[in-house]
Every structure is written in C-alpha cells, then in structure tokens.
Length: 201
Image (cartoon, rainbow, N blue to C red; front, side, top):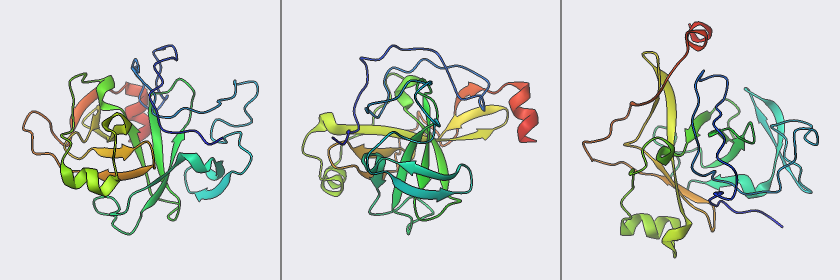
C-alpha cells in the first residue's frame, strides 16, 4: 500500500544531520511515512524497498529506485524552473532532517529541503484561496511545508520567503512567495563546520 506524506511524531526525535552540514538538528516531525528498512536490511539509503519502484537518473546519486508514493507534482514548476514539474523526495538517512527534492526529468536539478518548524516553531504559511485551489486542498491537516536550503557565508540558510507547500493527500505542490518582513530568503539555520566549509571551497 502506498504511503502518504504525513507527520511522523510517533518516531523518536533523535538529533542528527547530514554530514554535509557539520551540525545537528532535532526534528519535530518527518514529512514521509513508509515502511522503512533497518540499516541492516537496506541495500542503500537512497533505494526504497518497494514492489514497483520508479527508476530515475540523477547526476548526484546515479540511477536510483524511488517509490511512486514519494513523487511530488508541481503544476507550476519551481521559481526559475517552470518546466520542471515532477520531483522525488529522497531521504538519505532514516534520522536525517534534511531531504533531497530531485527532479525526475532533469538529472542535474535537485534541492535540499527541510521542515522550517524544526528551526522556527512559529513559522507559518498563510492558507490563501488560490493555494487551496491549486493544491486541491480539502483538509488543512494535509498541508505540509518545506523550505529550500543553501550554503552562504559559513551558514546553512533557508529560503523562508519562498516555501514549498504540499498537499499530502494528492502530492501536489506549489512554491509560494511570502512578504512577511520577519523572514528572509537566506534565513540562517545552522552554523557550518570548518570541515564542511573546506569541502565546499
């Protein structure tokens, strides 16, 4: 049975982070629920154990198999990439609070995502009618929010003015633009370690 995007508060909140960031974070929720294998059972952290996986080609991970339930559809594309509409949400570690949003049609197009409420508990995206219509959102409880992360000036930063909103019920997504002055497009999330900065140089 295909899994749905959902809160995963039933899982233990274990501080962890991808080695790229050189820091830690304590996730309050994880955006995908699935029958996840133990490390001993998993052949690869990038290959999901599914009956009918979708094979996609990437420049970062090579060719990987992805559960169709992890596919997200952005009818309007992403800002700057209007023609790239289908993506796979890839989790590289069971306890990792960062994810890759990999385009299924462009091997070189991928974004690092996280749940902004892991860093700012009061972060919210206003639910506008045009967003409701675009996402076919009938229940606000199905709304999930991610932000795109980048490295800047020794920090891992998030674009909190351009969040991605996903309807967990149908996996439709939209990138929206906020005008709230409290947030920025380069909101500091984590201070990067010297080792990470050296690898990025």
